[in-house]
Image (cartoon, rainbow, N blue to C red):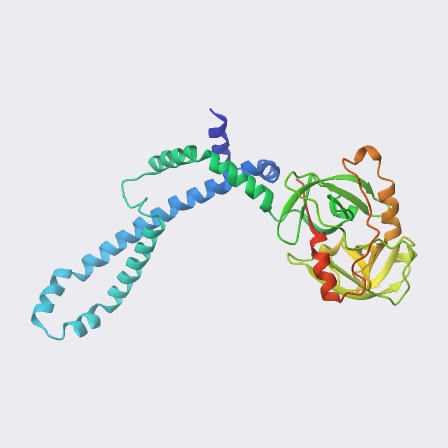
Amino acid sequence: MSENNQLTETIERYLNGEMTKAERAQFEELRAKDADVNTKVAEHKHFTNLIKQYGERLELEQRLDAIHDEIDVHALEDELMIHPSWVVRMWRNHHSKISVAASIAIFAVLCTLFFTGYLSNREVNYRTLRREVAGIKQSTEQIKHTINDLNHSNAINIKPGNYRGTGFAISSNGYIVTDYHVISGADSVYVQSVDGKAYRTKVIYSEPQTDIAILEINDPSFKTLGAIPYTFKKPETDIGENVFTIGYPRDAIVLGPGYLTASTGFKGDTTAYQVSIPVDFGNSGGPLLDSRGNIIGIVNAKQTHVEGAAFAVKSSYLLKAIKDIPADSLNRTLNINTKNVLAGLTRVQQIKKLEGYIFMVRVYNQ
């Protein structure tokens, strides 16, 4: 059996729900890692849907034929010849049947237009259609490769994942920070930008004790970001200062405004701040900024028994973690920005400049 046929049979078993739980998990992992396999699954699903729609169309046509026979067109023609009020009589006697027939006829016409005549022959069967589709696929192989490249570079379709958090750029060339607990135990990690583009990453450094993880985008479709608009504040921030975070507690980016309420975290943890700010689990790994747009921390926890209380690792520990990354773990230079262009801007203007540097982090594991 050829490799393509074997893959097709595997996809059919997957779509038909015939796999064991372990087989399904293994195949879904393959889909997440291999864009070509993921594309083939989508194509095969679309193909089987076409077959299903064609069968439904044939069934509708049979119903239309049955209704046509039941109405008895010849009797109606005789009636039209004898009675001048034939329009009224026909509608009164057959309006429900005519309405159903008209609806089915309209739907059948739309289906015919949709299939552009390709499936109009009732004698076409599954095997014949499959051979013809295979011929079309073979003749357009180069086009498929081009489309795959565009899909890969612009918007990889990724399922929701086992866990979701937030991350933000620490350099313009693909280094991103998030919480260690977000990516802990992950088999693969993707980041998705505000415009929907998704990129593979790898974890190059982590510090579980401070809940910090550094990711590197290693996806060939990634293009360098513009200059980072914010800086990282090392001195501690005062209690009462206005702060805010932006992140992905849901699919769209969300602003969380608030203020700093304590210079220590949970149970007096000196590595963290406590803030009064609306956050949810998807905010984990997001930036905590002061009113001037300086990064002062990384959101890492929510105190569930105190409404509105959250915690963030101080930025000084992030800077230390960046400094501690082994040189052989870096494939490119990691330079920290020292110029803040957010100071003096309104909050709306700050968000517009920030959102391109904030990423949704999607985590996958078996």
